[in-house]
Structures are given as C-alpha cells and as structure tokens.
Length: 624
Image 1 (tube, helix red, strand yellow):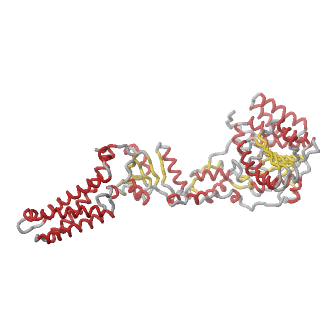
Image 2 (cartoon, rainbow, N blue to C red; image 1 turned 180 degrees about the horizontal axis):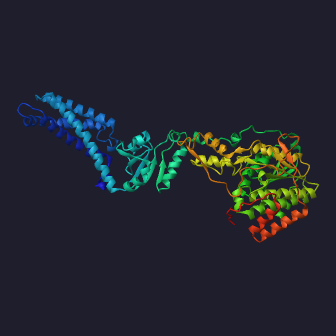
Image 3 (cartoon, rainbow, N blue to C red; image 1 turned 135 degrees about the horizontal axis):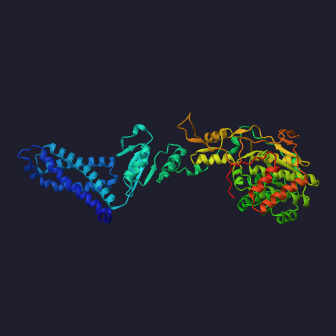
C-alpha cells in the first residue's frame, strides 16, 4: 500500500482527495435531509433534490480547484486550511439554496445550512483521519528516527509541529527541567522528568535526543549534552538565534576577553629607549623564536632595528608561523630574517649558525616549560633545558657574542618539579660561563607566569568555559605571579641591555593572584555565572582537582628573599650563590652519564644533590 502511495503523482493525489470530498458532499446532503422534518417526508424531498446535485458537484469541483483545497498536503492542513474549508462549505450551502430556488424546490433554508455545516465537519474529520492513516502506513513501512525532545517550551512545540511534515523523524515525548510541566501533555506528547530519560529510551526505543532550549546558556546545554552522550545517545541541539537569522559572521567575530584583562593591575608599559641601542644594527639570535615568549621577543626586537634577526626553532609549524608574520616588516625595514629549523642541543649546528650569521646577541628562550609534561619526561627535559643551554651558551662564548640573555622562571627557585630544577641548573651553567668568559656578558632574567602564553592558565580556562566547564583548579590556596607577554618581554630586553655580567634580574610582577579568583573572573567575563553552593543554578562549576605532581601552592622570585633595586623601578636583581667550575663540571658529567644510560633515577639524584632545596615529589608517577 505504501509503495502504491509513493508512486502516485501530486495531481493523482489531488484527484483522489477531490473524489473523496465529492463523495462526502453527497453524504452531507443525505444527512441534511434526514435531520429535517419536511412536507411529504425526507426521502421524497431528497428524491426531488437529486437533479440539483450535479450542479452542486460541478460547482464544488471548480471551487475546490480554485481554492486549492484538494491539492493541500495533509500535513499542511492547518488553521488557515480549516478556514478555507469553512468558506468552501458555506459557499456550497448558498449554491444549493440558489439552485434549488431556481428549479422550483420549496425547501426550508435550514436544510441548506445543515448541509453546509455537516459538509464542513466531514471534510475536516476526513483530513485528520487520512493523515493518521498515511502516517501509520509510513511508520509501518519505513524505519523512522524516534526522537526525544529536551525542552517542552515554545521551541519544543514548534519542533513537534515541524516534524509532522517529516516522514523520517517522529517525535515521541518531551523531557523538561520545569517540574510544573511534568505529567502534562504538550502538543500531543507526554512531558517527563529528565531523571527518567534512561527508562524512556528503553521503553520507547529512542534514537536521538534534541535539545530544544536555545535560551539556555551554551555551558548548560553542553553539560546536558555530555550527560546524555554518556548514556550512548545521539544528541543534537537547535541552532542559536544568531545562526537562524544568518548572523554567523557576526558571532564569529566575537573574541574572548584578552588575557591582560585578568591581570588585576595596570600593565607596566615602558619605552625601551636607550636599551634599544644594544640591539640596533646587530645580528640577534632568538632561540625558541616560534614560542609565545620567543615570538614576542622577535616582534619587539624588530622595533630596535637589528641588522639581522635569526629565528632558531625546533617546531616546524611554530617557525613557519612566526616567519610568515615577520617577513613583510623585515623586508620593509631592510632587516635580514633567517629561519633555522633545529635544536640547541646540536653543537655543530649551533656553531655553524653563530658563525654564518655573525651573531652578536643571543636571547635564549628555548625550553620545555610545561610542568606536568617535563615531570613525566625528566630525561627529555634535562637534555633540552640543561644541555641545550650549555651548548648554546658555550658556543656563544667561544664565538665571542656580545650578550647572552637567559630567559628563566620563578619555578627555578626552590623547585619541587623537574622543570623548575632544569631552569635552576641552566642558571648555574650561565653563571659559571659568565665567570670564566669576561668578553661575553652573560645574564638571566627571572619572572613568573605570562598571561596568554601557550599552555598558560587563562587560555586553558577560556577553552574549558567554551566547552561548558567545569573549570579545573588544582587547589583553592594556589597563587601565582602574572605578567602580560608584552610587558615581560619589554622588561627582559631592558634588563638584558643593562647587564654587565652574571646578574640575576627579577621583574616586578605585582602581587600574586589566587588562581581560584582568576577562574571566577574568566567565567564571569564570558557572561556566565559560577555554579557553587551559594548559586546552585549557575552555569559553570569550578572544580578542585588537586595539585599536580611537582606543583607548589606559591612561587618565589629569589633564593635569598632580597630584591635589590636597579635604576629601573620595575626591574630588580638578586645576589645568589654560584657553583665553582669543578662543581658545574661534576653536575654535567653525572647528568650526561645518566642520560647515556637512560637512568631516570640517577639523573634525578644528581639534580637533588646540586639544586638548592629541590624536593622531588615522591608520589609522582613518571612515564618514560
């Protein structure tokens, strides 16, 4: 039967519907005469009326085609179509009265009124019955997607209405968080509690859940979607209002709040001034030039007008990106731009790069800096951060570069993680080389977290907010120092230019910021509220996940605790103990042997012996 229906053309279907309507017209006439008490009896009166019927049928055919009633699809038979049907039935009642009068039939006007009314009801009911019959045939003959609609509001009701014209999707039931709607029937479907979704899915054989609550925040929808997906359900959401009205381009232009907005203080912008002279007309090499800090170093160095800028980078993608960004400004200002793909641990390559490019200033930013990754891969971290620094610094001294500036970290002070320990060892190496090589100014600049750098906490929080949360914080007591990328690099270049040799510079980073407070700011800046005990209906939860291996509650900026002023109010230096040449040689010998033997424990034992107050986390699970 279903196959036969599918084979019918639109015209054929209209003819069938018209035929049914004409049959119903005759039935309506019989009923109208049967309901009235007429002189000579209803049967005799109807027999006299039969010659009038052909005219009525002909008029009904013309009127139906003109009004488009017979060609209206069953699923589109709405209130407008019902109104047209009423006009159609009234017109035929009037036509019946007119033709009857013309042919001389003396009929009560009630007969024609009842005829029109009964005909209207018969057509309306027949359309509803036909629709159910056809839908039943399709349900029985084809596999339809059975959907559960989450949200019984206006959008959900409109969705049910839309599915009535869709032969592939069948709305089965509603679920809604509003307790007042539960147990009610909305748009012909029962409304259930979300707690019963599992039961409904099994009992009603649900294939998909549709989220019909566009007014809810994206994080809220994302939370619901994740919960349903864990139940093995296919989840889809209605598009946002911006997408429905074609404003996607505008939405795409909306950007997250910039990281510096969360600093909690004014950024410390300063002019490089005389410091730029130390980089002007010189060949400058930046190791790790494609990283967050390295790339910003390159941008600001360009403003100093060096003769050549050498980008030394291990990551091909990072090198390509910064090369594409800097090529045009370098060409416009007559600055030679050199891209070197390689590792600072390769002594032969480092030597060749320094000689071929006649490097005069080295800014060493290349390092593995993500604490959990280095904690899981200590040998790799030691090889890159310690031996890479030794190689680049030693070759720089032998070639005779003017300045070597190490970018260090506050995590180097009394470290509890491998990354911090490697940065402290790098500092000790640079101090040792500075003592033995007076022709090269060796110095280092130590600072805390940089807002917006790769792997930093603000982009991580913003990404978690976009995914609907939760925003994860390790511990409510954790505090960190923060700077913006721009001000950190500006101060690094200033300090490096002012160095005379072996200074440990420390940047003024203001007061430490509680990470939990920062997480709350990121959530609220995105237009959402924090879900906690005081606000259980909030959008996004802040979840405590515990300290990671090697992580401290707070960081320090110097071993001695004393920060001595310089002529720049935002730059300090600290006087710290150095190791002798023999001690440094012993460290490197022990580490080299441990790396050669792939002996992680031996390497960490060397680190623990020589790095001040290094206390490795014994509970940390390492992955070799």
